[in-house]
Image (cartoon, rainbow, N blue to C red; front, side, top):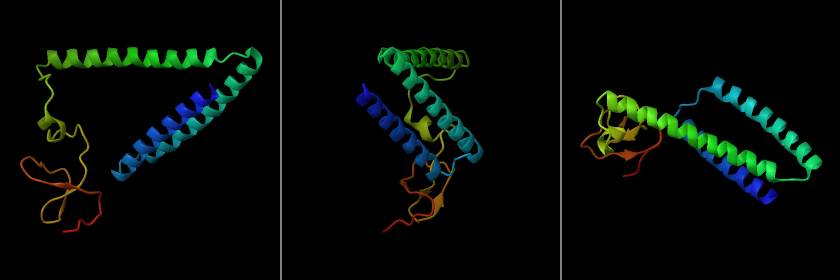
Length: 147
């Protein structure tokens, strides 16, 4: 079970690191939130690891950890279903289209998805411009494209 814990911790670290890098590259990090939640996370991790270690030493059972992870996953599933159902019902009542649409995904113009700066054919970086009907090459800000 220690191997399982190490594997889960590695995947959590990998996914959170990738998300952090994505936010950093898009210049979307709100530093005071990042620092606050980072400190809370470090404190909660220390407290949780200490409590679990003490509990396991006393009880000599790992099933509590498995049960707690399963409970958190089940709670997350229930919350996701509730929020998703409420969102779909709200969209249905407002008359919004419910079908998947590639054009609404990135070209909505409502700012629902952060679009990266892109280099158009002339090499000029364009940000929030509607790119419908134009070919674009996605590039990080400040990166020069060859060709």
